[in-house]
Length: 185
Image (cartoon, rainbow, N blue to C red; front, side, top):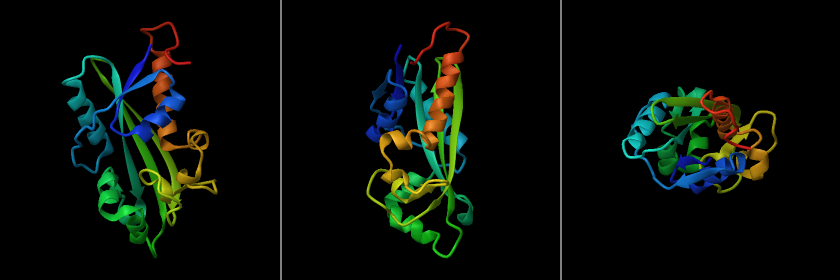
């Protein structure tokens, strides 16, 4: 059985596909409600998609939480990156505590109900190490000597915020009482 991932981001899909080989992508860039509450953002995305999609699906949203900036940009990270770039975000914490959290919220819609899965990784912000997508070039997870940008797909998929959220989704799907078989191998 395949599972549909609604995303306009091919990089996010590649990460999900490596962990959930049966997942398929529907390329829809969903408008986002502007909120500092990541649960509100993901639930709004699920509701918008569910209005026009008649099968189970999942979507996701990421946040970059920087405590020294009162948790800004949080779910507004996409817009902060568009406006400031990775270097600009790092400059915001210059002289402050550079610790941060990468957060991934996955919303799964089973056709009736929405289910939310969260993955969180703590780390710190560093000077950009490359030009991959999102905040990967500036996020150094705790306990690692490479930013997400410097990691191979396999390395990142063993520790990232998206990995943790996807594994919670996988566990949920595998344990659903409505199915006696594993949905993903």
